[in-house]
Image (cartoon, rainbow, N blue to C red; front, side, top):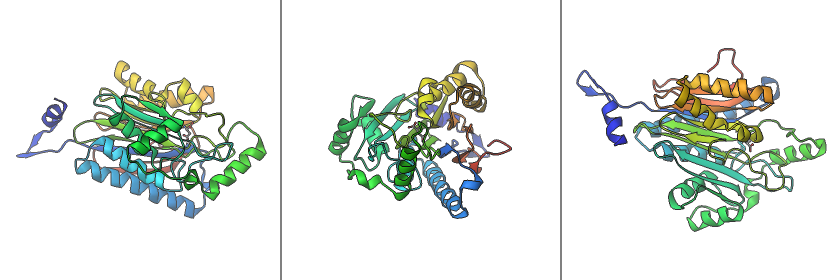
Length: 327
Ligand code: ASP
């Protein structure tokens, strides 16, 4: 039925059928990201990685691949890059290990899957999709998540595979500063939202969480409604930031609910939640979001957010720092 509707939405123009629009937005984390604390080489590396991610995702959407598969493929690219706090390059826990969180949601049927505290799944976003498609559950945690991923034939790696020198240093700094907030206050989570050819929205998020986390702490990224949400009747959202705030204020689902029930634009809904709700509470971070018409919003209240999008007209935006003119 949805496919039929999407087909009907295609319009005749000059004897040819115009293809339904596709669009994508990607984030690579938000935080204290300023020109002063980035070298030109680092900046170029992030821009290249974000460009590759958004361009490959857009090309796959144009080929007609499903939104869910595109979200997984793009997040996998970013999980495999040491630049981001997801998969290889994830931050370390207080005990010097990695505990990975990821989730995915399909806007056509509200199907969702997630893993939390996974220690050996090379690409946690693949495990999130497997939970959605091959289990009766939404969220698997810890050893159970690892065991399920192995049973599903996903690639299993030793925990040290995820470690990089940069994250070891960040943990040392965190421990010596003895502060609750990470010393390296660049969150670095990755997330993708898409509108596919069938008119379906999808969202996914993957993270190592926050440096020095303890006691099995789980953030917003694997929690549907907090860090990830997708519903064809409103929007798709992926968040990054201080998870405890995103959980309590249900950031992703609040943005979609505002779009659905109040009729405000996606941009207005995202601005309201990120700037007007979170800022007074001290909740730092941002979101990428997309609606059923292919409008994109990339909103954050930190110094910067690695971000990239290609909208329904094919316009590409790449950004790192706070803009005078919003994206
Ligand atoms: N939101 C993630 C968490 O709290 C961190 C991040 O976005 O980098 O676990």
